[in-house]
Length: 216
Image 1 (cartoon, one colour):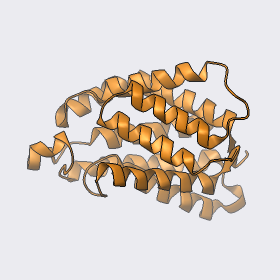
Image 2 (cartoon, helix red, strand yellow):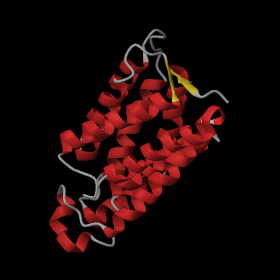
Image 3 (spheres, rainbow, N blue to C red):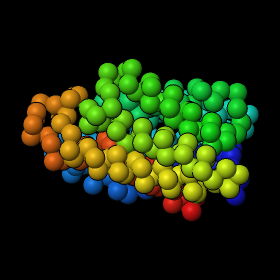
């Protein structure tokens, strides 16, 4: 299997992730209701529906990865107007911008773009690792992607790299149960937030899982 993703392949990946996330939105609603205002499922549904609709329209074949992902991020944040929508939209836009002028990206470049997205989220959201947010799923996924590329070498594939990322992201999400929320509405619960999985982290883990299944 090729170890690069073209714009067309990324579009197909986004379609697969969007379909899976929309189908599983109710799980996120339940999780978010335990720590926040319960709008995460609705945000994900609206954001990914906007992306799916855009993917079904005629697009500019000369559009590079940077412009494409920036456009998808802007659509998500506009349609899913919430803190998660704004942040995830930022991740797509900023991560995409690191791929400006590229029409395909290899595994290392994908990991680097995800790191750029993580850095942008930390700057915009003023959160850090361990604050019980989506960052706690993204960071280990990046580490796992880079480790897979290093371990498998020329045998690294989209399937085994994203599977490693998905497993790491899920562990990161599970680990948020032991954390106390420090950011946003969830932080109002103080010590009561411990013992519950962060919805944003779980959403990220679900996205990586959908991506892994898509390539597998």
